[in-house]
Image (tube, rainbow, N blue to C red; front, side):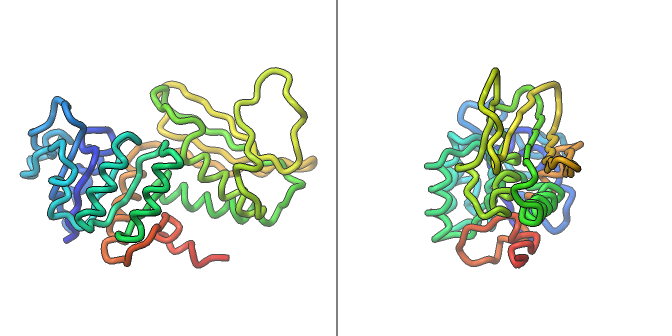
Length: 270
């Protein structure tokens, strides 16, 4: 049985994770944390998630939440990242980091932490998204610059980061397939009368509306054909299930920075 702590246990993803852990005989919830001042601090994490009591109270201390855990899963906010990473390093607890919108500095903290603990960082934990990411990489490598690449992502009205972490993941795969850096070719937020499209550019467009869980489309457009790869998330459970798959995989790995490519066995592909 894998002992798991959920950081961000009172959020949408956190509650989903707690519920799925409660239903899995191979997993045990041993810790749950939320931000200081949250109204549900001290409540049973199971009750917060809408399932039976699990005997685990929600705390605002990540170090206490992970005290007996083998793996911590973080779905919080970027502001909490540094403290959560530090707690896991201090106690040598493997970490699955699912929080998006991390700054360059916060991502650097992940690299530093990975020298001491096993850490999976994924902008999107959905197995389906990571499959389509590999297809994007393959298509980009095969098709070349004759095909314009455009990435369109849509999410619910409350999502803050733009473009989404998943869109950036797809963009990085497309850039990797062409042997270039995404930062050198990315174009986003087109408006008005801009410059003509540059050959090799990778475009991004973002939509924020309604309750859209997540919709990502990658278009490869040439003069004579258009190829489109699309993933639509219908339920946040797909992200939680992917995170739990990562947690089961990372628990006995040596220190290092891993991705869902590693979890799914794609890292051995060319």
